[in-house]
Image: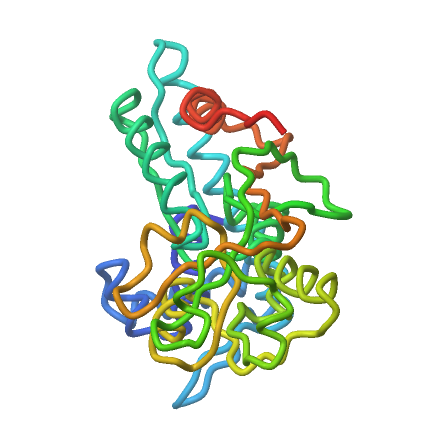
Length: 298
């Protein structure tokens, strides 16, 4: 088995299209197909179901893919370790984040890492909610993720980097938009815009918890993963939303942030990573994060 065979397999598995995979690898399609056949012959299994219209991984291909990824991860770790012996920090760290909720935490970290370690590449993936972030960390798809707490039944390590109360995002023509503060129960008849419940969003869970504490279950009229789109739909009058107080600074002119009078419900922001991740560049990034995103006093 050759490394280039694995590279070809990963490209086809991710693209699920031989033409696009060949373009990505800068190969003709025929040599790529031959490489995949050699790999399948070497393994003694079929890795792809092919038809004239589609390409899909077989169960054997799905089982083989994480191991193929791991080979390249180990090669990258090897490169990093050779540079580390000379005192250099070199390599790639993959970071998952949600979007608007990280507008005060992601930028200072990425700026500090780039200034301190110019040879480090940050691979950023947006719209990663807490549950997906934890799963990606466990599977090795991410090195670091911005998540909401608490996280249950997971071996990933977390560190609190922020705590803020939630308030209401209302359109400017909402009857309560002009109030200095409101009680959450005043929104009991409104439709709510939230991240999808099935996605495991800490913000969605905080919204539900706050509403239940106030004595009602929110009527969800729209579920959407993009935090900026949540604010856009609020501006359009589709519904109301509960958001962290930091979002007040990025509201559009057609929406307002109104604090809640109730007992505060907090959103706890954290960084998460796998403790057994051997990447030296991840350790370097975590050290920078300790400086620019310290754990707040609670």
